[in-house]
Amino acid sequence: MSTPNQTADGGNLRARAIRGGVFSLASQGGRLVIQIGTTAILARLLSPGEFGLVAMVIPFVALVQLLQDAGLPSITLQRQDITEEQIATLFWTNMLLAAVMSGVLALCAPLVAAFFDDGRLNAITIAFAALLIPAAAGVQHRALLQRTLNFRALAVIDISIQLIATAAAVVVAWYGYGYWALVVHAATLPIAQLPMLWLTVRWSPGRPRGFREARHLLRAGGEIAGFNLLNYFARNLDNILIGKVWGEAALGLYGRAYNLMLTPVNQINVPVGHVAVPLLSKLAHDPARYRNAYRQILEKMLLVTMPGIVVLIVAAPSVVLLLFGPKWLEAAPILAALGVTALVQPANNSTGWLYVSQGRTRDLFRWGFIGTPLQVAAIVAGLPWGPMGVAISFAAVNVLVITPLIWWRVDSPCFRAKDFAAAVAPFAASSILSGGALMLGGGLFPGYHPLLVILASCVWTYGCQLAILLALPRHRRVVLELVTMAADAMRMATRPRGA
Image (cartoon, rainbow, N blue to C red; front, side):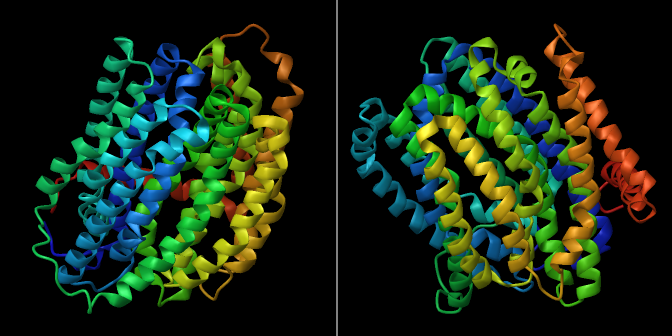
């Protein structure tokens, strides 16, 4: 394993970024296929109520995970110069926080069960609490692989653990253990991942030392953690309130729709973000190159994600029927409403790369005090009308209020709000035109198999997007660059390491 500071500066930055990107995207693609297959199988073996039961615990688990993470992996990625002693300090800080948070969550298990008035949640919460420590033990090792753009190894690890977790969950569900299949799936991921990461990185932190020298890193990590904590309430309050007010079945429907809405977003944002943050961090001193690199990343990400999200909106019944089966059809209108939120998520989520790569973690933290109250207000406003009301209210606030505000706040010499508007305009226009046409022609596929409806819709939306880009001289390069990058990526991915 290379030393912490042996990053992509040692070679061709563009080549390393493309190579890293193709393996990261391949990993997410493989994980997507596995996750869809897992969801399709488990949705037929378990009820919406069983999914909803586990979903009740997830917000509390997510909270303690944020606290034990403390934003420290982002610091390992962002800092251009970081010593092994400092990384060891971050590792032991993560482990200490994980031990504390694990104990806190276990002690709070009876309170979680009492809040939802369901004794089964006590054991589920304790099981999730035990997973925090093995998860924390691999955080810095994963960050080191990302820092050195070693996404080939991460791809192998991620796909392997997904296959193992899926097999374990399906076996447990098949033998009738119900919601415990979902707990086993979540437990298998960090436990299977840990030995693979340690064997791949071959870096051990040694004894803890150097806390004084790493204070500035811990402070910056705290600012990122502060934003993540604020963002947590916007991301999880809906699950808590729907579960409390409307029950586990309603939460099961909402939770499946929400996770499906995030699928096209996360499958692109996450791997691209893994490459973008260290890449942009190296270009922050050169605004022109930084601006060009970010815009190229953003445009290609929108080309891949937005047409697919439009299909989720207009073909929601077919998507739900194909993946989950007839008993989940009530989730279709919820998915369509949440899909409107997903249209702006890829671009909005990428502002985090800008803040972190420019070292503006304090500005990121301050944004949390603006965005979080708005999203919380949207959830509360829609709650009286159930999951559908929450979905509609959440989408309206994200599209009409948060999107313009977040891009006004992120404006800097490196990337201005007007650059964002110019980049997204053709993608937004294509989404509106192609989606509107599909909705008007919704009766064109009566009685057809859901898979055929989805495939036909995808051909239409992606075809419209390509046609609009190719018709605009200034944006034609997006398609051409994507084709060129795909060819370069395939060539680099098949080239032996070191060649």
